[in-house]
Image 1 (cartoon, rainbow, N blue to C red):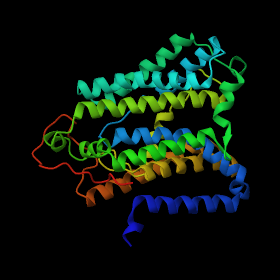
Image 2 (image 1 turned 90 degrees about the vertical axis):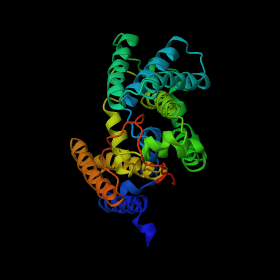
Image 3 (image 1 turned 90 degrees about the horizontal axis):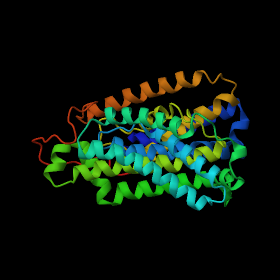
Length: 339
């Protein structure tokens, strides 16, 4: 059956088996409280993965997302500390605007100046991290310096689910609609599949690349507030290394680093896979120091599978074409745009 060959179906089955095996060893993992905790803890990763997916399908990458999250979170935490009367309805847009500004810097350098994404975002990651220290003076913003409304919002419940989960569901629904039914989404896949042909048929390359990095930044800004409020602390090294988890979840979910291939369902399943591993380790009494090793092994396996699928489809593992380089092939494909 063709549907069984789909990466998303295979990953979903693996995820079900993994949950069943962990549940057999530790039945507590299958409790309603544990599942609720899993969904809540994975929500920020899901949102970040979906934003990163839009970047990766254009043959790009955003290594600055965790630093953006940290800087936006610190900025909104300091603002809430200085003006405790500000409602969450104001602080969330401020965090998103901060992230949008930072992401737009990446977008301008990559989309308008045609600079390599990995170089630009690696540099901006360091700049953002340094700015956190300058902004905060190296000091922490702790729970006693935050208002109860600021801290409680992410874990408040609506119809039994936390606000964090609702944000993740809304992000997944919006990403699904954009990638499946909008011209914007189709053009992102066209750029990733063949940038030269995409330019030839009139895709506005610079604007699309600018937009995806701006969106990535805006989502990181939103997650900055949610992270700081969820854990009730803001400091210079917040979410350090989290960008690796985001990229790992994308790769595990079948989103090709070569560009042009990936789905919302795959991204969500990749994030949930890492969420299950991270939440299961303490329950099955495995040292958290194994987390990096397990995650790394999973990434290697996922890359091998992606490479095999790429060879069968005639697509290279890593593309040598930059988004601004023209090519002689006539038509830009939108393969992988369906979710």
